[in-house]
Structures are given as C-alpha cells and as structure tokens.
Length: 440
Ligand code: GAL
Image (cartoon, rainbow, N blue to C red; front, side):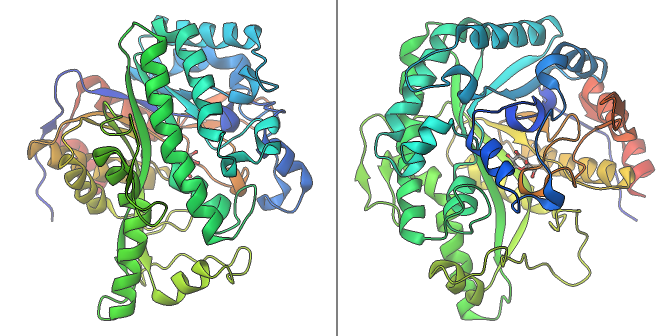
C-alpha cells in the first residue's frame, strides 16, 4: 500500500476552475463553431451549444458558487465574435458585459485569468480565410489591444490563444474541428500564423495598458511516447509529434523564431521572451505509431479515423484518454528549463463515477506538488471545469464538471469532487488522510 504524507502548496497558490465562452455562455451565434454545429453531422448525437450553461446570464451565481467552493481564481474566455461582430466594429454593450463579469469575479474573491481566443472565430474572420490569412496575426492583435485598453484595469492575467496546437491538429490536420481540413501544408501555415499571433497579441496588450498584467500562452501538452518502444519507426514518429506539438511554441517563444517544420528558424522581432508565464493544460499521455503518423501526414486518414492508442488495461476517461498522472510531473519538470512561472490552466477528466474524478484530481495534484517540491515554480491549479459544458465535437456527452447541471433547469448541483476540491483549496494542502480515503 502506498505511503501518503501531508502535502501543502506554496503560500498564495491559486485554486479554481477554467471555462471558455462558447462552452458555457450560450448563444455565441456569431462564430464558426455555432455555424458548424448547425450544418449537422459533426457533433456527437447532433448536439449544439445552444444555451450552453447559460453562464452569460448566470455568471454572478456561478462565481458565488466558486467562492463557496473555496476557489480564489477563475479562468474565462472573452468571445471575440461578441466584441467584434463585424470586422473593425466594436460592440461596447458586450465590453460592458465582460466588465460586469470581471467585477463579479473580483467581488467573489476570484483572481481573473482571461483568455482572448478559445477555439472559436468570428464569422467575418473565418470568411477572410481564418488562420490561413497572413493578416490573421494583426487582426487578432488589434482585438487583444482593444480588450487590454478597455478592461486592463481588471485583468491581472491575460492568456492569448488557448491550445494553438489543437487548432493546428484538430482544425487542419485531423479534420475534427472547423474548418475540418486535413492538409499538412495548411496546418503548418496555421501553426506559423498562430505563433506570430501570440507574439503580436503579447506586444499589443503590453502597449495598451499601464496596469502591468502578466501575459502568457496556454499550451496543451501530453506525454508523447512511442506506441511500441522497441520499434524504431514508432520512436521516430513519437519524436516528430513531440517536436511539433510540445516543442514548437516553447522553442519559438524562448528563441524568438519560427521553428521547423512551420518555419525555417527565422527570427521574429518581439517574439523572444513574449511570455511572462506558461499556461499548461495537461490531460493525458499519447502513444504514437509510425503508421498513424503516416496516415495523418499524407492526409489519407479517413474523417474520424483518428484512434487514440492506449495500453491494454489502462484506466481511461469517457473521452478515451489514458489517466497518466506521472506525465504531468514530467512535463512540468520539462517546462521548468524555460525559467518562467507555470500556471496550470487546465487539468481534469470526464467520468460518470465521481470517485474516479476525485482520484484523478488527487493523483494529479500529487504530481504537481512533487515538481514544486523539486523547486519548480508552479503558481496555480485551474481545474477543467466548473460545470459540465459543451465539449466541442463531443457535444453534451462528456462530464468534466465539478458541478453537474440539472437537465431542464440548468440548476447547479455540486458533485462530491467539488467538496473535496474545496477542502484542498481552502487548506492549500492535502492530508495523508485524504489521500488514504480516496486512493486507498
Ligand atoms: C481542452 C480545451 C477545453 C476542454 C478540454 C476538455 O483541450 O481547452 O476547451 O474542452 O480540453 O476536453
């Protein structure tokens, strides 16, 4: 039986949940996802985001609940398509809405983390070629600067683009997210524009506000390993995927270049060191085979043909993702080489049995703490997510929430994990007793 000890987190550690506009607000009618959902055939069980969690109207209630649940931080995203419904036209009523959202967060003792782009694009941006348009970085930087000018006094942490490499892979390589492309050349061009966009957004925010916010990217990382460690082909494939998915932004931002394969290592003014912190999203390990990489690279993978490899007997979430806590530790340690503070901006699991969620949280926090104990500067843990929500192509068939939504009324019903997390957040610590009670 494992030996557990009490562990505590550094003073001032931030605890809370992460969300995104399209997944929780409801009625984000003016973006590419909304349009895509309505085409039909893309979302599991024909789901649509619709009213989502009605967070647009219930934000105050949600933040009161977060406070009751012991949180002292919270991550939202601003819906670009609300703020700039047509190119160059700002909707000041929506700016006021987000000001009220931020005021409510502050009133409830929640330090705001604000993402500017979380997967969804305004329709006009899509119609101008979306992320393939060479002007995309400037278009989004203009919006970032505008937001920082309008709301800069209320936002200590700006997050530029959520999981850029998911936009690259799911949107342009695997055809799972709009615009549903499967083309390596386009994917790499999008990767280049996203890195440039981050750099320009960083500069635009810094120039627009005197409130000295911290600005960083949100990087999704998985522990990428060869499916068959004895196969040279799989080992090389895993290396290739790791370079593209895990290394690309890190190299780009630490050296100020567009690294291969999206670029040729050319320097970009203002890109080097354009991060005050790293936002890390971690969920799982990824096993890569040479065969899968070949199918993806030449665009012959059938739509929805992407199959995640998992070891036989592995513990899986409803998403089919392997529960692999030690990968979290490994990636945090790897990030520590860049000498910028790390904020966990997402980590969580979709399960039916809440005991599994509690166990997931405890095991992952243990790995965060292990890295902190070895001197890594980790400053926050934001759980994905507060409530169940619209899980992209999975629609309403996933359960990531610490809090359930009552069907019909959308009333918030905290799950047992919400209370375990509350006790941890309030104590800024986990006791050996808690570990024993839930991990056995
Ligand atoms: C992340 C994403 C979130 C959420 C989560 C769970 O990749 O940023 O929006 O969907 O995964 O799948």
